Image (tube, rainbow, N blue to C red; front, side, top):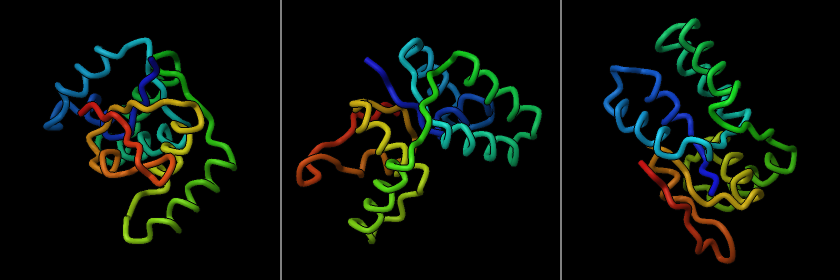
Length: 138
């Protein structure tokens, strides 16, 4: 079964000083061959890594993901529309646009498991009357 990978796990796996580094590496290894991410997450991951670890590390990280660690799904215009609708439906939440488009992609593809250290993945609900939750491995 496919598992979605959020920026928080990609980054922690790359940063040996991150408190979640070992856990991130273990999660990625445990789910190897089943990993999915989006182009938006890839860009966010590069930006975060470039600012904290340097451009060279960011390029290596993204190249590794891009060349086979995970399948990369393109975010569609419809995913941006779903993200906007999510924001309108849940105005009290500060979910990022990358998280909201990620959740749209996950639902669109029927992927209900995620690797994330971002608690928003555990808060978000989807489906009929927003009663479904993702299984989040952290």
